[in-house]
Length: 242
Image 1 (cartoon, rainbow, N blue to C red):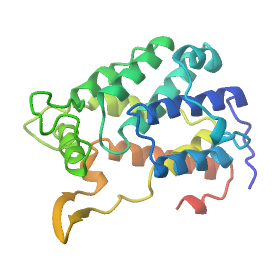
Image 2 (image 1 turned 180 degrees about the vertical axis):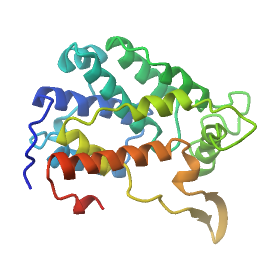
Image 3 (image 1 turned 90 degrees about the vertical axis):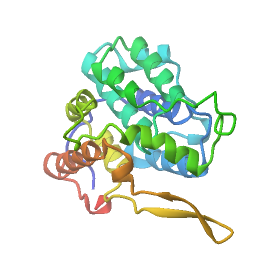
């Protein structure tokens, strides 16, 4: 169904937005087939329908600032979606942090949330020759545990990620394409936990994403707002996202 709401962003801004998200997705140098398929799906209806993924490249910070324009709310909304891409798997790497801060500087944005997010950084233990540079499921699980350690439900700990939660909640949903992006990027239900087996023996247990990512509730709430916007304001059929 065609949306009855006129998009708030130009095609140029949306393409730049997508390229900025690609810069985050490619930050760690590992752009696997699943991520490629996901980004490709966003180019067909959700963001830039006429964009060829094969020719799409990550954008520089300066190019992004120019394309998005000077409006602060547009720039900050982009950063919010960039953070969501960075932490979607519950793992926030130093390379993702570096790219995010480069983009934020070019966009002349200094949200407190980015500094708070740094408390969850996955920093490889260079003193440990066994784990240094390790790229296994077990290493990633240990890295995610650093993020989970900032537990919003623990009575004995302050909610160090409160600035991030509050900042994400302020995302303005004003464009159907961005709303569709949120609905597609954020799963409708918590992905199931699973075991990684090797030669018939369990190597590592992966908890469900809602336990790995302390920002998961924020993402789910944003998805609900996006669905409501598409259904109520844009009068679109959202059954494909449910």
